Image (cartoon, rainbow, N blue to C red; front, side, top):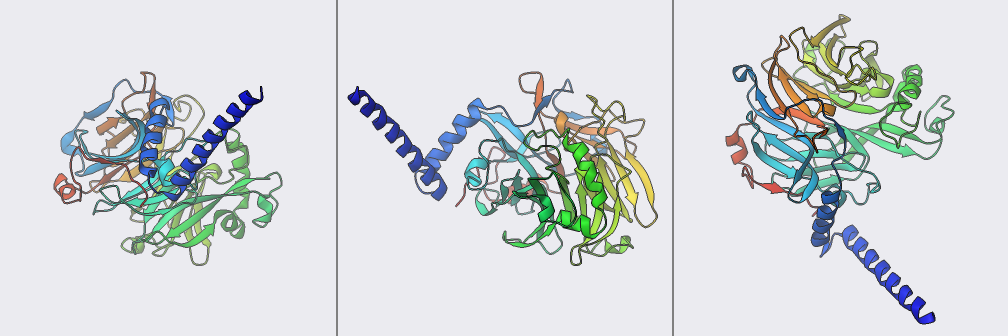
Length: 446
């Protein structure tokens, strides 16, 4: 009997030692880390379905060219999850109007952010920015931000709780949505009475240098309290009860920051109430969009009534701010409120317009997520995230182009977090290092 237990103890000890050695190798990123990383990624992605599988809505997939002559030129960046020979993985793809993949980055988020990710949860790409030289920045949700070149070489990594959005300021720095979890009552972190928030996700506006150094963080809750906007926080308790992330209990995600971007100097004269560098901020769970002076932390303007659980406000010129209004109504396809919208507000005239949909528009709804972009030809590029669709619509609301993610097992589709049009041609991409239509590289920490 003693011999039997000795053998069991020996086997368990060897297994534990192997685990600890493997963990140390991964953490220190020394050989044979690359081999372990590849094996782990392949084993995990083979058996795990993609994150954010949603019920399939559209009965087609791929590209549909409804009016190619009306399209804006350029290539479209997509962030989602795809299945290849090695299994599922988060990826960033550049496609042309025909849907051909011109370049791709396949992301192993556990290798990049093993020191900051909760590996018991699934993670996905949420927020990206492509630079003309082929460098791309991306957030692994709540794990961190990385900047990689066109070959997939990691230039820097920032292992903090970044998520949702990355915006490049005029000076080349970046504003990124960021979050930290407070283990104490939120009332100890900000003025006011937040009883009941024993643990809270505290959102921050994080300013990052071009080389990945944190320059400054702005506490969102402090901004709300300092500017007499704390009354909007009560709305988050209602939103929390229907939050689709089960890890966040009611009231623990009081603001849900999902976008921050700076007013460019080239557009500042078109916004009489604001100055270059002012920040446009979106807080989903309090249905609030505001413009903030980052130096004084003074809110210069805010709006809430025009949208419900919104995303992605943008400065679009002539004093207008466009907002992706999810218009969430908790029906299967938003039928009660007739789907998601793009709403424009002009702060200095207190005007509001609905840019999309129109009577000529296709059905469009995503209960959460969603991105939009005003293109140079006045078309709109819209990301219907939970339906796996990106579509370009003309000013009259007609669809001129769409791309829909191929379904998974027929009845579901991976969500698409972002579709963005970039003014790049295939010739521009051919100047990138490692340029090839069939090139794929997994970013690996150096």
